[in-house]
Structures are given as structure tokens and as C-alpha cells.
Image 1 (tube, rainbow, N blue to C red):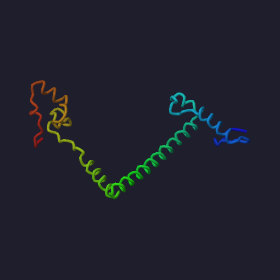
Image 2 (cartoon, rainbow, N blue to C red; image 1 turned 90 degrees about the horizontal axis):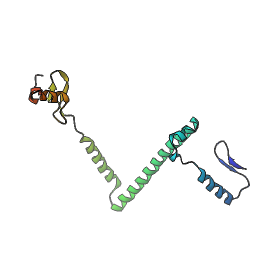
Image 3 (cartoon, rainbow, N blue to C red; image 1 turned 135 degrees about the vertical axis):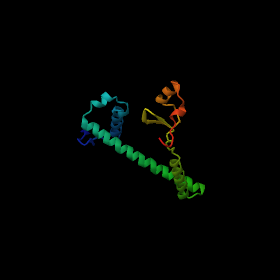
Image 4 (tube, rainbow, N blue to C red; image 1 turned 90 degrees about the vertical axis):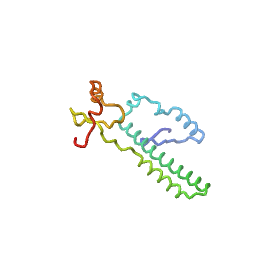
Length: 152
């Protein structure tokens, strides 16, 4: 008897290894490639099947990340050993680079211009001129008329 039990484990009675290899190849040919299935084709599966697929994919992604991380660490160790530099020294340098790149974030420029009709509307003078100020300038006013002074 050949088949799968309810736990999807392959069962086979009375077949030799060659038969099993041929059967395995046939099963592989007939397996569905989930990556190429459309949303509608996937929707034909039961919710429990879809959840099982999702759980397996999530586990496979985590396993893949873990294995890739271990492989990369191994390669880095080998490269460090070959170069004669201690890995801890390289890691320390990478941390410094990472820390300095986070410090380079730009702070928001303070506002230089304020709309007298709506005090919440301001402009730093950088980037595109806001519509409220462009309209005022088009009506003959100067940008300087809207400069924020200390007493505002």
C-alpha cells in the first residue's frame, strides 16, 4: 500500500528503493509550486491549510535568516583571521560607523516666516514656498513682511 497518512507522512509497503525513488520523482513533478499560484488558486485551499502554509513559510524564513546569519559570521571570522585583524576590533569599528551615521540626521529647521492670518502656518525658508506665502507675494507683498521677529 502506498499513500500518505493523516499527518502527511509517506507510507509504503512492499516497494524496494528503486520504486521509491521513481515514486518520489513522480511526486516532485506533480507538486504544486506555491510561488506561482494566483491569489484565487490559493483561496481554493481551506483556511486551516492556508494557515499551515503561512506558519511553515514563517518558520522557513526564520530558519533561513538564522542560517544566513551563521554563514555570514563564519565568513567574517575567516576573513578576519586571514587578514590578521581580530574580529572584535572590526566589530568595534562597525559600531562606531553605525553610531556616527545615526547622529547625522538633520534637525528640522526653525520657522522664519509666519502667516498672519493663521499662526500655525510657518515656513523655514527651505524647500518650496508654501501656497499661503506665494499668494501673498503674488499680490504684491514682500517675503520680509512675513518674517518672524522676536516679539511675535
